[in-house]
Length: 181
Ligand code: URA
Ligand code: SF4
Image (cartoon, rainbow, N blue to C red):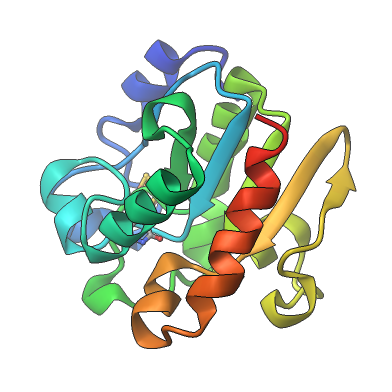
């Protein structure tokens, strides 16, 4: 575990704890307010994130920004991170060994930021954080409280690009989160 972002960044710099280190251009640790009340957790960097080293700056990120704007959430007020910090090839889902190797970094991020609320974006984040028994269809939109943190599972914004009808639920879930901000 790491006690500060400085320590975390130093440790991460040359991380080769899993095979995702081979093809990355940039490690994507996270961005936003390091004292945020609300933290968003996605899956892993895509091509744009890998190129820029910042989470959610591609198509899915732009859609998330639009939704943030719509419900009155400022991107600068929240903290945004991913389950894995290096881009999986062809944007495939991260594999279990990669998730296991990377999860300590996220745990440290959560310990340092100390969010009251964590929004889990999609199935990969939900299962990695709360366990394999959770499904996004059954859990989305419902608060789950564990160890003093309130979790809100919702769709991954990339899922909204594939299926527009999911936008309504996504916005609804963000509005629910906004109530506590
Ligand atoms: N999808 C994710 O899960 N995370 C990102 O940072 C970008 C796209
Ligand atoms: Fe290290 Fe995580 Fe990147 Fe794997 S994905 S190399 S564990 S930073």
